[in-house]
Amino acid sequence: MESYRSDVVIVGAGLAGITAAFELLNQGKKVLLLDRDVREQMGGLAKKSFGGMFFVNTPQQRLSGIRDTPEQAWRDWQSVAEFEEGDRYPRQWAESYVYNCTDQVYNWITKLGVTFFPAMHWVERGMYKPGNSVPRFHMVWGTGHALSNVMEGQLLNHPKASSLLTLKFEHKVDEVLTQNGRVTGVRGITENTKEPFEAYGDVTIIAAGGMGGNIERVKQNWHKPWGAPPEVLLNGSHRYADGTMHDAVAKIDGHITHLDKNWPYAAGVHHQRPKIKDHGLSLVPPKSALWLDYTGARIGPMPLITAYDTRFLVEQICKQKKKYSWQVMNLRIAHREFAISGAESNEAIRDKKWIKFISTILFGNKDLVKDMIDNCPDFVIANSIEELAEKMNKLQGTNDVDVKNMKEAITDYDANIDRGFRYMNDEQLRRIAHTRQYIGDKLRTCKFQKIYDKSAMPLIAIREFILSRKTLGGMQTDMDSRVLSTPDLSGQQHPIEGLYAVGEAAGFGGGGMHGIGSLEGTFLGGCVYTGRIAAQHIAGRKLM
Image (cartoon, rainbow, N blue to C red):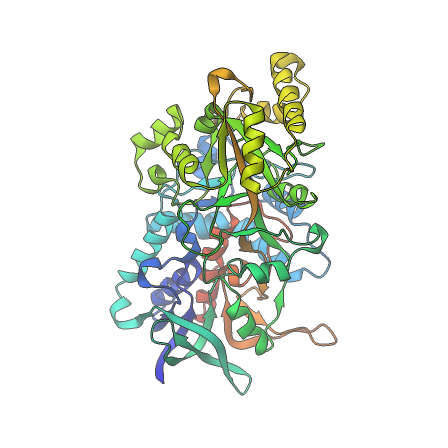
């Protein structure tokens, strides 16, 4: 059996693991970084992300005239999180992140070479409860791909890397080793040769991500108030985010908590060139499209529209008899508003091509729309409502879509627009008017565009499924990122000696610092923040 030895063993070379390794090298610690994936995929799920990060009172905000404070952000966070009684560590981690994210994450990564787009996105504004009261979603220029590459480069080119850092890819860890109550390392097998290995260290850090890539486990832990899980649940997570390390930590009495607090997205479609089973993409749903249920009726009474409450969208679709939906629009709306979250589908931003990016803003992302119409099985086009309904039914293999429902939804919506702005009495149009007041949304949102508009044809229908992405719960950690034991009969817990967890594996801090919902952009930031705190504590230092 191959055997390794280091001061610190880190399981997972995603953003959290890379951050922790980099900080440990700064402190002169010898690090062994193990990852299940191939070398080319170093960076994990963060590398595939859109690259949005939640920060408070940044230079970008101040330059845009946005006044923000940690106190205001903390109120917003608590509103969305709805922490429960007993959520001691999740609450403490959340408050700590809100008050320290700009100094300990934003300032830190910008000094390392990460840059941000000048304008912020305003997401999760809140539907029936307060959300982000101001824009806080800072876009990394280059998406999560650039963020991961910068951190990876900093690690691999560290002055001490040649002497202190060892990288081992295609190494699957499935067991945590202990002796006399202390964690001494991990055991597993190599993905390619299936040879066993052991890795020993004074300290072990779990940075292996969540379990959103294991669809069966997501369904087993489905949030009960949402009813039964959808029959079709697409995979928008990492292929190795399967919960293996959650099981390994649970076997040594580590406390795994809040696994039903997942963070799916409502507008998932099948990847046009899938790489894994049920591979899905998360759309940024066009605001001017009509969101319909499986019968073609408009979902309501509050119409569904993005940018206000992601969880609300998922809840409403899960209330339907059949838990999938349709968005109906025309080609003009698609060209102006259609987008897909993630680095892969945003080439201009990912590759830092300013001219191409500005072109998509001015003229629409026509290449992406065409690619999806031609290659994604969830898109249908037609030149009449009747033809569209017929094609929707043919795609699904049912007669569920009722053309009368669609005609009623489209006619009522278009009639509101015809009456003029003063007399529009439709909540979706009110929300569109509201979002267009912010320049970041105005550039990408149509000005009251009708659906059945002969000058904007053809009509487009997109079949959308719930898409699994992130796990909000995980290994419970104290404020030093040490994994805590399962509570005893009196409710007492203790840190498991020699074991830390960071990033999504730790629910981004404390086993679930988001509560039931996220203000978005807090996942990447949580990975960096927890990684730094764990490394500093191991080195005998304090981040704050």
